[in-house]
Amino acid sequence: MIKLKKNLYLLIIFLLLLNCQSVKDGLTGKKVSNNDEFLIKKKNPLTLPPDFDGLPEPGNNVSKKKEDNKFNIKKLIDTDKNKVEIELQEESSSLEKSILRKVNKKLMLTKNILFKNFSIKSNNLKTKKLFKNFINENLPLLDPLKKNYKYSYTKKLVSRLKKFSNFRIIGMGGSALGTEAIYNFLKHKIKKKIIFVNNLDVNSFYFFKKNKNKNLNLIISKSGNTLETIVNTNILIKKNDKNIILTENKNNYLRNLGYQIKAEILEHKNYIGGRYSVLSEVGMLPAELMGLNEKKFKQFNNLIKNKKFIYNLIENVSTTLAMYKKSKFTSIILNYDERSEGLFKWYQQLVAESLGKKSKGILPVTSSMPKDNHSLMQLYLDGNKNNFFTFFSVNEKDSSKINNNLILPSHNFLKGKTVYEIAKSQRKATEIVFKKRKIPFRTFEIVNRDEKTLGELFCFFILETILLGKALNVNPFDQPSVELIKYETKNLLV
Image (cartoon, rainbow, N blue to C red; front, top):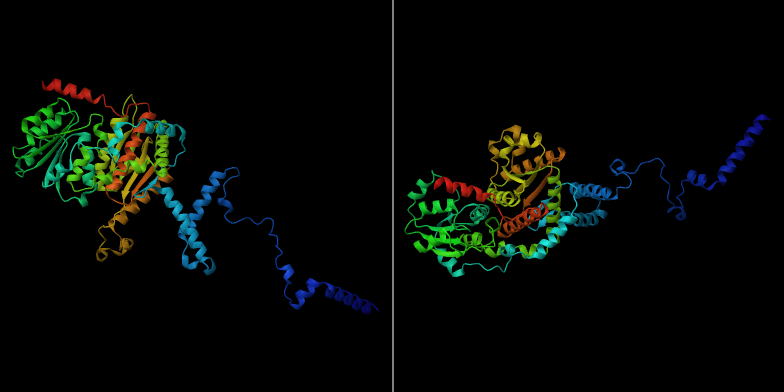
């Protein structure tokens, strides 16, 4: 009896299971019907989304966008296209190109200059207003930066002077530094030999006096009364030399000397200060004699319409002011390009002489890299924190290559590398360390070494300096205290 009941129960259970469609389908292996294929199954409620730890805190939407962009861009750059599924390859490639285009656009100051600004929060409103007011002033000082500037020399004069293969630039400060910056930066395009006499060096005169070649002397002084220029001119010029004197159109020593020695005298416009004169006669006459295209230097008209350039200029000035308010007064240029040393000597005068007033100012210092990794870098990393830095490098297409046959096994990582690639790695490594140490820095990476690029750099630094001067409430166009030393020197010599 008990056995019969047990069998009856099992039969009832079996019949119930057969009438349950889902169990029946499962037992028979039948495919799910089309009506069920688009049903969405719920995820387990406690399963966290991918990259949950990388998500920003709630309420920080701006930060979230930035972090998402960084993650996606890195992912795209690091992705091996061969590993992408075939059906998604075309879509992924176009997405990658689109994002990389946007990234490059963000980093470009111009087509020739890659730029990354200081990673410091700042308020741009005041700087925007300063920039707008400054541009509306339309100062004559900016005229040399423009395409339609009229020089005091003629093309006929340039043609006559080009026959000289050797010439000397005799001048001090802004009368020579800009031209020297042009010569050094673009030396690969220049065939002529140029000597810069821009200091009083008692040991160099012997060499100059032994030089019996017929020289073209460009003697430059805005005031016409610069003591060092007068002394150098007196000692160096010879009877057979061709002399061009560039000075203001007023009574001064060099103009009177020019009449006496029958030199050609050109006007140095009185409204253009020496440190702002590089794109005027002061720098462009020598540039033309070097065989360079002066028109390509004139980029102001294009840059002033370039929204990216203006945005980065204003942002850069704003962040510099923010650091200045935090007692960071020293601007250190970490220069990875030897041919740009002249550019930063020019920059030093521009910044120091324009801003150093009323117990204010920024001290510009140039550091030669990577050489100074072995002397000054310890101080930069662990010393006082009143500095901010500029990384500067130039992409070199032609660079010496490592001799693989002389590389020991321990340094196989150097094989096939160029000197430029090694220096670039050192720069990037230093940037990584600076970022980890939270040391403020910006980066200029030059794409093309030519007149146009150098003209863009001149414009950027000139505009940056003038805006900083106006923001600091100092006159960026005078240098009153320098006159004190001239006065005392004359008293001692009389």
